Amino acid sequence: MVEPTHRVTVRAPAKINLHLGVGGPRADGFHPLATIYQAVGLYDDVTVADAPDWSVGLTAPIDGVPLDDDNIAIRAGRALVAHHGLDLAARITIAKGIPVMGGMAGGSADAAATLLALDRLWDLQTSDEDLLRIAGELGSDVPFALLGGTALGTGRGEVVTPIPDRSSVWWVVVLSDEGLSTPAVYRHFDVLAPDAVADPPVPQALVDALAEGYTDEVGALLHNDLWPAARDLRPDLVDVEAQLRILGPDGVLLSGSGPTLLMLYEDVEEARSAVADLTERGFRCTIAPGPVAGAHVVTYA
Image (cartoon, rainbow, N blue to C red; front, side):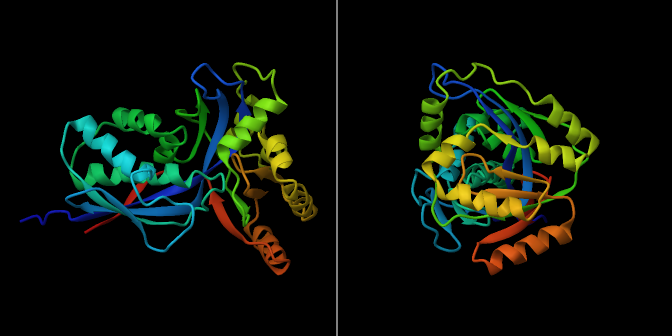
């Protein structure tokens, strides 16, 4: 006799944007994007279990993560059961490994992990197409968290297409003690770029460099249209960026809307050396490989 599944744990990765091209706001208020996503090896683990009512908790307390119906993981669960016309609920427990309010889509990873975990818990057999559609309704970065790897994102970022990526790189992730509001960064972008194009172009040179695995070229082509807005709102990041560039990485990048900064290395020992140097100088940083797989089951119990 097969024992029923009582808990499922799914692991989902952080994302970075190797390129983030931002257009002027659409009629619905969203900004059109042309972005290259890459999943990197920092993870949140989401465990779900049957419960009479919806709830969400953390394995360790973290400021800035709502523990009520505003949490995107609960919204993901409700959206999934609504899609199937069911009356079910779950207890959701999140072990955070992705920086909070760091521009690395930790909330989106939680939503993607919840969708997959509940689908497996209840054996809903939701099609990939429907999972991606539900994910896109939850947030622009949620579909990519399901897919992982490296992908082109268009629309407002929710339309994702995997692209070839022969690179194997290491990212030094430099954290900030203070978060940076994504809506505030986009609002300031609108002020700085009132004539932003309606449809930002796909960065074909970067797509080609990834397909060939040319890390030097990838590093030179890293780009984020939100960088000027983030610099204005957080002038301290300008000095941090300068200190990072002195260490000679293949590239330096603002992660999404910030404030996390990233250093690109092809050689893991060079990345470890940079972490040691920055740690000695008082920075909080870690190392993450890329690209990595998207949301995936790690435990049935």
